Image (cartoon, rainbow, N blue to C red):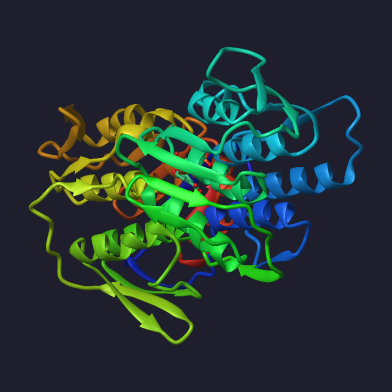
Length: 418
Ligand SMILES: O=C(O)C1=C[C@@H](OP(=O)(O)O)[C@@H](O)[C@H](O)C1
Ligand SMILES: C=C(OP(=O)(O)O)C(=O)O
């Protein structure tokens, strides 16, 4: 496949397909770390083919196999979750490591996690700018304290990283969360998956406690990725008709992004639980009069904002603060690209509002992706309304959903390399 792709859709916009989504990037990242910490007692089933999980899996395997003399280079590329999880993992694993990633990774903050780990005795130094990767980690620390204060409003990944290593710390861990917790369902997912591996916890208010424990032999089965499902919800919302089957997805999921199901109900997409998954069809629209809070599901933001814009709905959103420190500044990226449709997204006191009064669909648009998989996938469904949508750097989707373009073709879209 060339660098960019041209996406179009000929004929009646009636989508009928059965799309087998890959495993959840978030669940698989956790399963791999828990399995490594358990020395293989915990097995992972239905591994995701998301590039970020493949990267993390490869790193964990090579760390287990390799010799620990000298400082080992560990490069996560663009995988933010892997960077955060490995910071805690390598802090407890004996050996010396240089943990790094892409240029963008070096701009994604990690100071909150490093401070938390240092406060219980970990040896971590900044190899570049303080507060950011790359890190030099001297692993296998002697624990000096069990209680950690940690900000909850920057990234939940810092908490998940600490919680997974907690059972192996001689004193366990007591997390005291400061400020409002962002991406809360991801912390719950971590605790639920730890529970599946035999680890108990207490979570009361702002305090989570995990005592020293051993993992029990178990299987962690990775469910399909609900964040990936969101693009199919958007396609169903923008199509004239839809009969889409997503096998193995369950409404009762560990993934907070399963909330797309309720949100898209209002956008006119009905979800039916079928024997082996879910099916999407068109239903009545009922757009929310209230502000949509996406603090619990930030990875859905681009899907929902672009879909609402394309439907000409002047919706308002809160909980978008963390979008600026993800793969790119996602607010700026959305603002830039939505401008091509005459749509603005403006902020007033942390409330972001779409204005679609000048919405128009050019004959052809070119979408810049800013090294962000979700920009590519959130904008591709516009091919149902714009004759030709060119998406820059098609391969960005590999980070979480490598089969995205092949799946679009399966559903009747034309996808050509340009
Ligand atoms: O723990 C996880 O698997 C994730 C947590 C979220 O990050 P934040 O907690 O930084 O919002 C999410 O955006 C990311 O894609 C995956
Ligand atoms: C933010 C994301 O990933 P990460 O933080 O793992 O890079 C994402 O997948 O949208």
